[in-house]
Each structure stands twice: as structure tokens, then as C-alpha cells.
Length: 91
Image 1 (cartoon, helix red, strand yellow):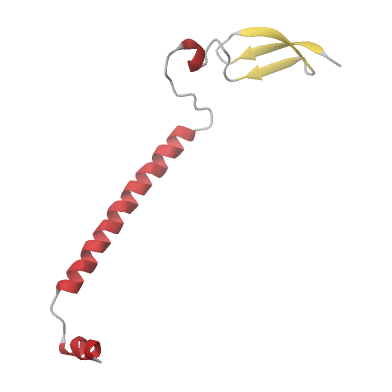
Image 2: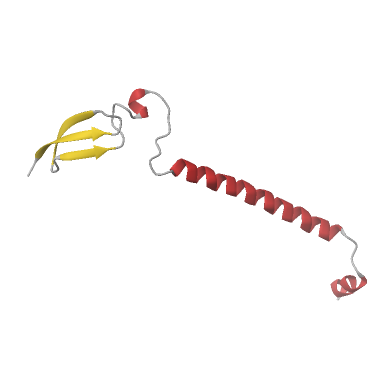
């Protein structure tokens, strides 16, 4: 069974299409989509941008931590060896 469905966008725009449903709710339409309007904006209904930015900050922090660990290991190798360590290495 086909209906003349009314599509209603979150921006307030509405239009009629053929569908198996009587009414359709959408988050974005041609009246507010950046491709058609020519303006750039973030359309984030599920917090994806914030999640991505949080993961990016975590990755930056992890990179700094790894760099600090590497520096510590290099300094540890530079320190003078104990007699015991030198004898174990010689074996």
C-alpha cells in the first residue's frame, strides 16, 4: 500500500513524497544540507564530533606519555652501570 507521505525536517521544511509510510521525520533535508546551501556546518546528532575530538586529545596525551617514557629509558641507559650490571653484561 502506498501513501502520499509528508516528510518533515528538523529545520521546519516539509514536502510530500510517495512512501509506504504516512509520515516521515528527518534530521536534514535539501533546504538545510550543507551541500545544497553552500555553507559549512557540523551536523552532529549523535555527538560524533565531540567523541572524535576526545579521542584525538587522548591520542595526543598518549603520544606525549610515550615520548616521556622513551626519554626516561634513554637516560637510564646513559647512567653509569654498577659493577654487578657490568659483570652480568660481560657474561
